[in-house]
Image 1 (spheres, helix red, strand yellow):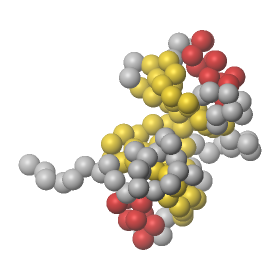
Image 2 (cartoon, one colour):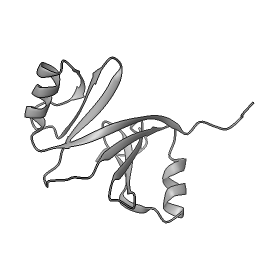
Image 3 (cartoon, helix red, strand yellow):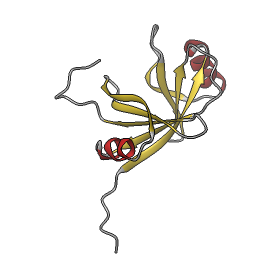
Image 4 (spheres, one colour):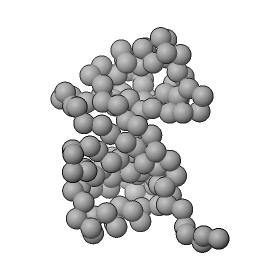
Length: 125
């Protein structure tokens, strides 16, 4: 029996899109996904799901061919471990309404976007 503490809560692909509102209409109207959160006018990110499986859509200003993966974590211990192991940091920890997050880059340029629940002890960005 393993007594290892679970660190990863979930993984969710994050698709870079040029027009969030247009992509949101496609996913909700054409593909019949439901909007979970975000997506209001002016928003740059949202989550849609179908059959309890989520995809995040993130409006990226530059044309990006890299893939982003959301990795929901239980705490920020992996942030510190990965940084200490020399993984390229794209974004230091930031507290947003949707998550306390940090971004890393893999050797192929893909983004590993780790996040926990937003923190109440740190001001929102």
